[in-house]
Image (cartoon, rainbow, N blue to C red; front, side, top):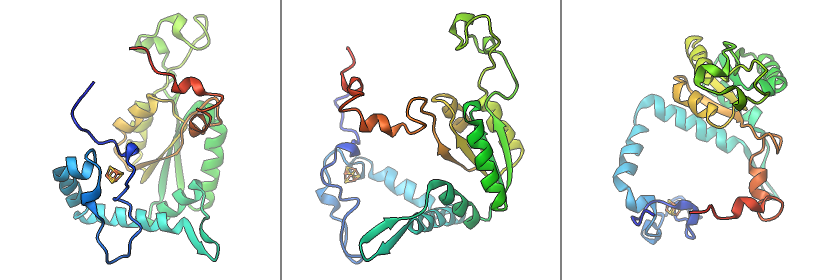
Length: 232
Ligand code: SF4
């Protein structure tokens, strides 16, 4: 076990990075816990902050924060949310002046990809989409044994090709790539190889209707096995 102090924001009981103070006041950073990245990595903070001095990055970040704020509204009853992520994505793409969007989807979410594409096209975007099975390359190509395939040794099984999906969207010069439902690991490869701005509209969860957080909400009850300690 690493004894060195390292950032663990999830365990913070004094979130001074997100203070409820007036616009003119200063956040009490000195009250942050010892494991706070603001204390442990002050140099990184400074370096990262200077990236926002680049004009294009600053503008992108500015539009992202405007979009974030527009997802809420002040009402007499308090702060309310009003924009689902699909709409948030559309509005952010419009703010950036994007015209051509790319969808990298899992074959298991082909219907969702079609619906998303229809919605985006109706909002005036050109939509390029690439299915994970593109190439129809057998899984044996990456070293899978016949018995390691989902459908069994007797069936042809195309491998997921997230690198190909990313490279096609790079080649097609989409303004924004949208990830839809790729598996864990395949999404990691897509992100590694994607060279255009990208965002995620959905992540795969085969059990919870692509809402992986449901497992966290049920981790004190039906899915308590998630909380049992791994054996050393
Ligand atoms: S950045 Fe510091 S203050 Fe903020 S949550 Fe992390 S540990 Fe807490």
